[in-house]
Image (cartoon, rainbow, N blue to C red):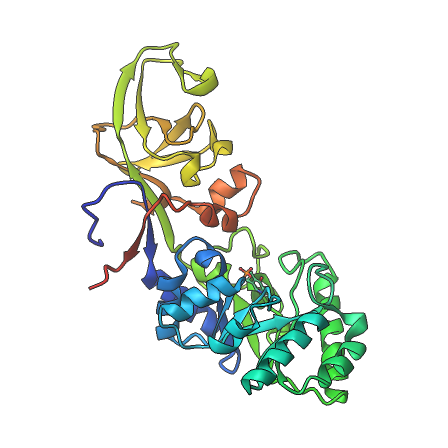
Length: 381
Ligand SMILES: *Cc1c(COP(=O)(O)O)cnc(C)c1O
């Protein structure tokens, strides 16, 4: 058993050992010559990007991936030295940040490319960029049909070096979709075309978590892994296929702040959407939808108290959630309440809460708000 914390406030415990375990599990799953990019955008899916990135860097991850330049700078400021790819790419006026802080932009727009080339020329730097090709996601990327023209245009920009070429899958979690295979074909054709035009990227990458697991032919020279690192997979990986062993990284815990015995027929919370049908013991927990414990879970989710499940009753409000602990013995104020996590063989995964909200686990962990302090395990010394 790990040491429990004396602070029993509402908190998210981030198990960095499990993060490292998942990373090595993924490493083993893809072949050893495939690089792994740890995707730590969105504060590492709510887990804390600095702490997660530092641990991943020390475990030997090859690249880190973030969405915005601000996220990349936060990592550089914290001392991260390994290459960082910024998915949203360069923005007008911010080129010098990419140059000065050694952050690699993904590139999908010729105007941004020209601005970056110009800034690199002034700085006397040959700037490495990763070209993003849209092969079917339909979000950002040079449309695969236009790759020849784009190749000609970018070849004229002598201060840029296309180090990498990437694409992103739309449906890799769905084995009934033929889109992924089509995307891989389109991408490989685009790479061939780039090569004909004299562009020879060293790094070629397509796969996100479901792509890396379900489509080994998409591994190329690197995989970009987010969800799996955080042990999230049940709702983004296709069922019934071989997958790396994963352990959840985030637990969300709180404590019982208030306890009361009430008789049958009493209402609980806003709208009185729940009333007791027996004499009941109701506990109130200091977590609410501002913390990211979604209101959509009202009267639907469950928590763990003293090793046993207890249902959430009534509406979840901004700051409080009520639970029915009538069937649990010896409950006291101050007892630990597990909202995501496990104990004594009982487990509540982020996936379970996500499903109740018709969402995915990524949104659950991303949604645990800044009010909830992240406590890193093992304790830093
Ligand atoms: C978020 C993201 C990933 C990671 O996806 P997961 O499913 O979390 O592994 C990979 N590539 C790009 C471009 C992304 O935006």
